[in-house]
Image (cartoon, rainbow, N blue to C red; front, side, top):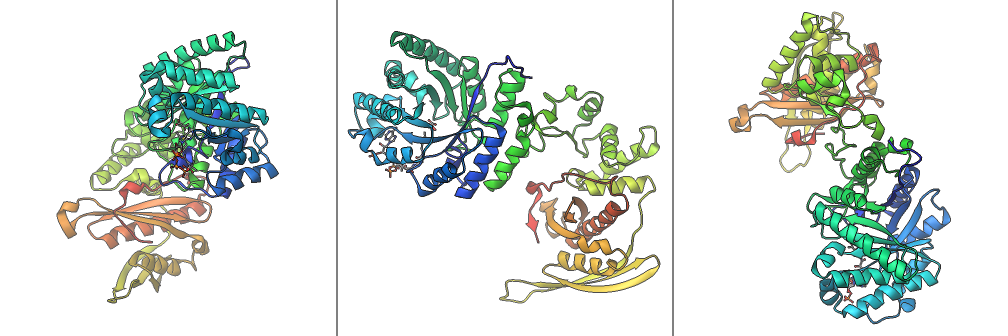
Length: 558
Ligand SMILES: CC(=O)SCCNC(=O)CCNC(=O)[C@H](O)C(C)(C)COP(=O)(O)OP(=O)(O)OC[C@H]1O[C@@H](n2cnc3c(N)ncnc32)[C@H](O)[C@@H]1OP(=O)(O)O
Ligand SMILES: CC(=O)C(=O)O
């Protein structure tokens, strides 16, 4: 944990610039503002907002922030050096940068001679002039400059003398930060260590000689070798003091260094001070907020912030974690705002069952014979195709059944479903009739639905609502099915997962059968039953964050 004497690291978020270079990610100005304000709350010192002048959205974004500025963070405008053989003062792009009204500007320039001669199609000398003019011009206009040395590591490996000249030029022109970029993401951690140390040494000599303030070193890494986080950590350990990255690792190609992994590693493992402890505890929420805004499903298995990051499935793991979480957890989940979860499956032991019973508010003791019976029943059902890890509500019902405490709210006497498929029509209508008995009274009801499961659900709810008015609040929020043994054709078993909700909570139930309707019927009925249980024992059965695993889906009906 960090203290007052922990060394300071400067975080630099580029979600709104490099992050938006990810294929499939597109944000509106409103989205950008929401993300910027969330990062501002998190206490990220630098937020790169975009490239004003490159597109109208980024121009507008900076103007809107001038009217209603951020409270804590510095918003940074990003741009390239001027074009070859032009004058910085007359570059329209640099005028757009000045109009963005930021105190800080990040300028990227070429470090690799190949890029100068092939990409820019100019001379090595002219590239140095481009770096110099651009930084000096921005400085003369009152801007503080961060210099991003694009392709730094490749450039240094191919022609170290020239690469170092580009940095010397940036230092002499007044850049306050030299950010070394692994633009192509191909560098390995030991190379990063060596090169950052060499640059630190060289830039100190250069700055000393010129009697200038020694610029600080920053790092910007890409994930093409799956090493962006490791490389950024290596750079920090070799002396870098600014770390650039993005929330959830979004970025061009395979992404940028993931700040959601970097921040806890830097802060909790290496003892650097990046953001406050309270802010660190908001990291999981911030990660999910950003994925929600950019409309990308969160990575469930993301380190630190993924829903599975502290999920324990193997029985041996759960047994030990129950005794001491340190046995299978590298940090406390709460430190990053995440939480521990116990998963129920055929990999479970008795510890999973007891832990799950506890979280569901069900009293169960290891010495009760029912505890082992529940475990065995669950394993038997899993071998038949049930999968309880995504259907905790069904597992709760199984436990109540085994304990002889399952409440009988209603009894289904029978049902029929008709589907009308009309050639040439896009939608089909289904009609379900159902016979139910409640407290000895028989009810016959019918309802239509867009598909057979929706019709069945509607008919059942119609039949039950006069006995249980709370059912009016229930809704079927998701329905997924998976064919379990597809090679057996139409006799294959189907697993149906039904997610239900009441506006405050969601719960998932499942059914398995060779008949897709029967599997769905089991899941729908269990969903209603569990919903009714929630009202009779609301505290006991609260399941906070259930999920349906999308990879289970082969057929879906809404
Ligand atoms: C490593 C990075 O992630 S850098 C950031 C990359 N991000 C982006 O490219 C997103 C925003 N980019 C854009 O909107 C556009 O590419 C613009 C507006 C910047 C430029 O658009 P255009 O003028 O149409 O050119 P184009 O997209 O083909 O870009 C290549 C031009 O940039 C020039 N360029 C590339 N790097 C630099 C640099 N460091 N300094 C100056 N010019 C550069 C190239 O020489 C080329 O110019 P030329 O065609 O006159 O030789
Ligand atoms: C500047 C930048 O985004 C890069 O070099 O990757």
